[in-house]
Amino acid sequence: GGFIRLKAGNGSHGAGGYVSIEAGQGAEDDIGGYVGISAGDGGDMLLKVGTESKDLSNGGVVQILSGNSTMSEGGKIRFRAGDGSEGGALSIEAGNGSLLDGGTIKMLAGSSNFESGGGSLSLIAGDGFLEGGGIELVTGKNEFADSLSGNVSIRMPFKDGKSNSIDLSQG
Image (cartoon, one colour):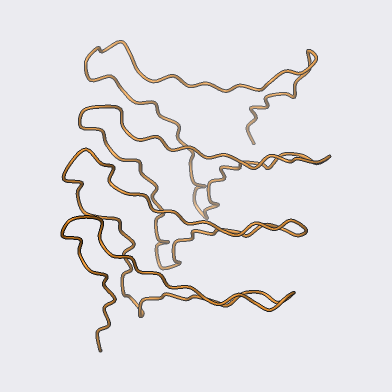
């Protein structure tokens, strides 16, 4: 098929150029327009920031943000791997540190500012015909001292001497 390339100019004495693709705003109570980016069947998609920082600057930031709403539900973000004879894998990895700490993965459920509960965080392994999927929590090992590894911490805050329970059950 054909080829389309959108490219901003390189900076000879400053930052490179800027590319922006935006859908239009809706009139009054209507929703805004739609931006769709898709690869053909079996094709790949790459969303990438830079290749390598050449000085002491950061490598760049990729942000995927959904919209806020004051009177309705906020926007949603969904990552899903494809179905197949073997389901597609979803991998989230933080970067390695060559001189300092490795990158951190942090998942936070939302807080409530009103008389409602905070958001939940669920890790649920898949069902299987022969065997269900597993959940594995493994701390990092220390390459320098054999006796030190990462900590596992499960904490629940107390308020007025009260807290909910921790339930470990089988079956």
